[in-house]
Length: 196
Image (cartoon, rainbow, N blue to C red; front, side):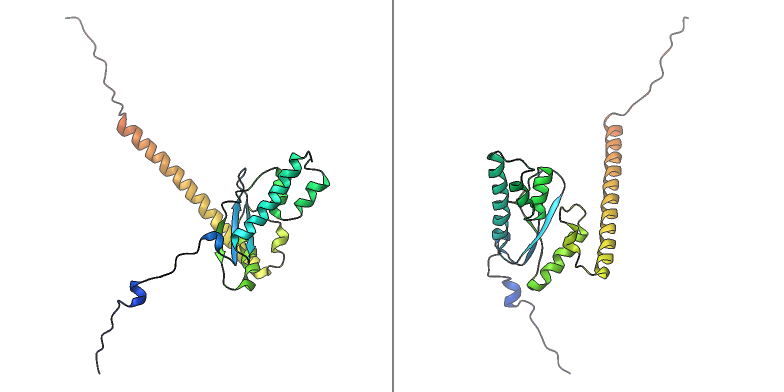
């Protein structure tokens, strides 16, 4: 039996990556989230193109809406209602008169298999509680996935609720501790002068 030596300092370990990281807006095959500026709602979308190209498409629709409103059209006019059919994002913009942070999308998932994008998007829509996406966006999701994702969503909401409650309790305890340490209340009995 022989003993061999191996060096853990390989070229791969010493020089991790010679490439610069790809900026988020230049990534493709991505699932992304855009937050509403006016409420806690979010829009979940997918793109096989660069994220920058998809955001340009969303921004074009919003710019068209703004231009038509500036021309005097009302939200109930057919010219505005046509834009509502473009995406759930536009539907929310028109029905609630809100706007989204299109310049600040967040990538929530990436895959190298573009065939998996639709399933990933449905999973993220199903597990995010405050999406503006239409529930028809998850119609093709298998019942087995739907039940599993519903369980994940419920546990995530319970965990978030309990962490919020724990943070509140901790803040209350911290405040109580600070008050008692900085302003201790000392009660001294009054002195009574008795005549002699």
